[in-house]
Amino acid sequence: MRFISTRGQTAPHSFSDAVAVGLAPDGGLFVPETLPAFDAGALARFEALKNDYAGLCFEFLRHFATDIPADTLRAIIQKSYTRFDAPDIAPLRKLDDRLHVLELFHGPTLAFKDFALQLLGNLYEHQCAVRGESINVLGATSGDTGSAAIHGLLGKPGTAIFILYPDGRTSPLQERQMACTGAENVFALAIDGTFDDAQAALKDVFGDQSFRARHHLSAVNSINLARILAQCVYYLSAWLRLPPDARAGAEFVVPTGNFGNVLAGWMLQKMGVPLRGFKVATNQNDILHRLFTTGEYRVTGVRPSLAPSMDIQVSSNFERFLYYSLGRDAARVREVMRTFKAAGRYVFENFNRDTFSASRCDDAEIPGIIRRVYEKYGYIVDPHTACALKDPDPGRPSVVLATASPAKFPDTIREAVGVEPRHPSLEALKARPLDKHKIEATPDAIKAFIAARAA
Ligand SMILES: *Cc1c(COP(=O)(O)O)cnc(C)c1O
Image (cartoon, rainbow, N blue to C red):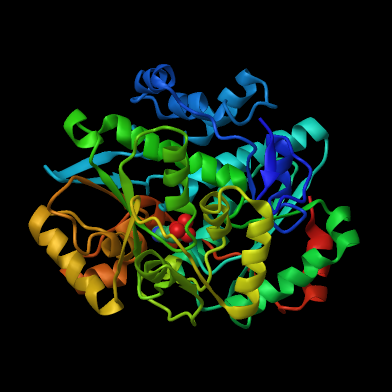
């Protein structure tokens, strides 16, 4: 299997090369050259593995990662799902006959990003070993992605990870997840300024080609192909474990920011796994809600919310959706992206609403939803998951993806239901020394720091 760019101006890459590069050199996103078409035989093989998460993941990923020997791939995957604190990795919890919750927060940082970033960390480690080269991963974060990436690379030989974040603007627990690891290859860099300042400085660092090449820099972001493919697996696993009468009609309800999560489910459907459809649940930053209800994709400013990992302005994964929606016509993708960049808006014609529905949830509604769910089911959800529980469709079964543990958001939960959820791994962090590096958000300061500590 080879991987091509949504913009059509990059030579096909192997799986490992596409994963290593991240963004395609022509500015597009990697997609499989052809999508596998899973037939009845393939679905039966998946079915037999429905209670073996890592086994199922291998059976799925082997169709894509064809340049990695099967035994090696199996071992990489096996290792990636050992640090989850639930035996079935992604527990499917039944709240009532119509409503299931897929718990995606049992990984080391208690949010769904661990599913992809644990695997990505092990793929990087494998690559370092095969090529005999080190790798230095660099990223900016406003919260969850940075900590999940750090925990994917923690202590891995040949790698170092540098994560910039705005000092004082992440939650205290998120900061501790990044800065209390005790690992020698992890550097949490606190800057004075905003997330955008951090992003801008990073962009300059990556723009310095010779520095980039010298230190084998790689970016953490939400567009890596391996992240999307890893995320397909929990949709598949959940679908296989649904009661047979719920499978055909179930809608997957997905708390959405950058569209990476829901895109994975949609791509799985395109490969022939008969998922019925998806509800894109946004918070008050509702660019995607507006798209899926009106057909217009238009940028507005970001308003910080109680569900901060969904606070986005433009969805970076959207280009993959566009590519398939435009019949895989890379020239049209280039044209639409150009128009969108210039005008800040794009209107879809012949918009197909069969597969997607959408909902939006204001900050003012979130505590009430958490309270209602708690009173009805005795179950506590985090503020992101709450957005997806705003109005469950009574007419059909739903699977709500729970993207973070409520223990990560103790203040919002306490205000909503009067109890404070705790998690042992977060409690342990509170006792550890904070090891953060204050740094100026300038390309020179960042480069000097990396040069002194690179793997
Ligand atoms: C990242 C994140 C999201 C948004 O996921 P996307 O793939 O960006 O749509 C939702 N909830 C939580 C808790 C997250 O960390």
